[in-house]
Length: 373
Image (cartoon, rainbow, N blue to C red; front, side):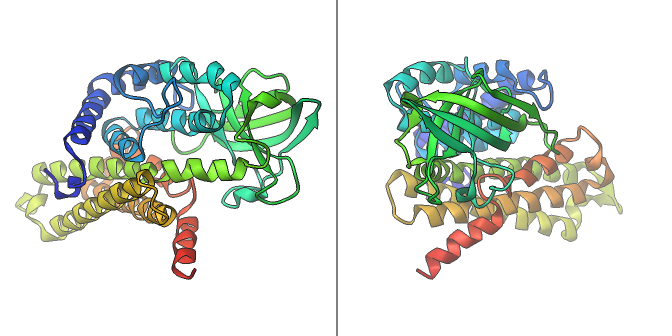
């Protein structure tokens, strides 16, 4: 057993192996039949059938450490499944922990079964890293709200069945933000797909007077920013876990190639210039995994240093994944740049982890602020 799994008990190791096998044997074949850039509903449904979901029908949520274990395992064999799993959690968790009876009864069971697809709609054209700068307006209309504005770079948009939408209900930067559950077929809601380097579904949403009943407000008026940060604190360590899974996949491929590739009278595995690079990657991957597990445990035990621990885990793990993939590509040479090669795929997918849910620079700012409190 790799020493960086030292924090996992027998149950979590079993969960990891179950997710690893499901990703390889069940989910990857389904993912391969999907259309790039589109929601793969068959994959979402299959995930619900083989693994515990991030949000349960009764509103219960997986511990952060369980999320990390599953996302790392899925990312090693099927990044599409890992992405689908994570997005169900991001979009569904605010409904589970902040929704009233009406919205929970409408959405939690379908999300848990994989019959509905969720999305987390926070980012706007002028509000990315500075999430408190969002401008999408929510105006009162009797016992309801009318939402108008634009959300962009929203994963699963415009195909999701329900969106957790963060909107401005007052001018205060953070206290003026409220979260809403918005049905994907709501009148006045439209969207279009974006085409980024990765293949996962992402798009822009336009809300033109979308009417949302007051019973679909999540966690009360004015508490949306806190709910968004609560959600990100829960899922941020697992972004690092997904990055660890991708790094592990790249390392495995590089080691296998170095063992078999003949060059200079032997294999690449005889060349110290190659093997020492891979040794550094292996060390960084192990360290990243430990940081991820420690951050998840901090979250699950209510440690007040959770935000800093999560920022460290995401920062180090995602930067490690990019280095691991880059080294693996260098070991392979030009063949790794061929379209469809695993490393070409991991290069684009792992790069995104350094941006979404808080770019690396944002994570450094979180860490630095904690240092100088």
